[in-house]
Image (cartoon, rainbow, N blue to C red; front, side, top):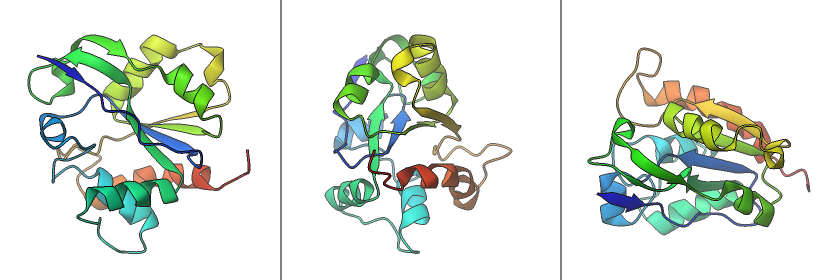
Length: 173
């Protein structure tokens, strides 16, 4: 089945673009980024910037929170064929127009890749493109609920994702 990414969640304040691969089945059902209740993305964002508050249950409020902290969301893949939600099942992909997004939002300073497959896909399609020379590229652990030897808990993920915090400071760029 061919699936398509959502439009980016971004505004002119954005300094960090969080990039996943493609929406999961649950995200597609709900028309929301990271809609699976066990995915850690929203808990990581609130853990970094929310002063101990849990993620708001209202999706639109979560999006406002994200933007208020100079974060943006999108996927590396514009469309692909995939059965289920696993990245290993992605086939025949078309990348999103990341150079075009960067042109529209020149204040972006960092691309934070949510997992290896998102990072690998970006590198395969855009490595060496000079438009990204001023962008810091961070390959971060996936916020998927599937544990790994290094990432077993929310706290592990928050610790790794702290790397994005310095890039969210407004430098009036």
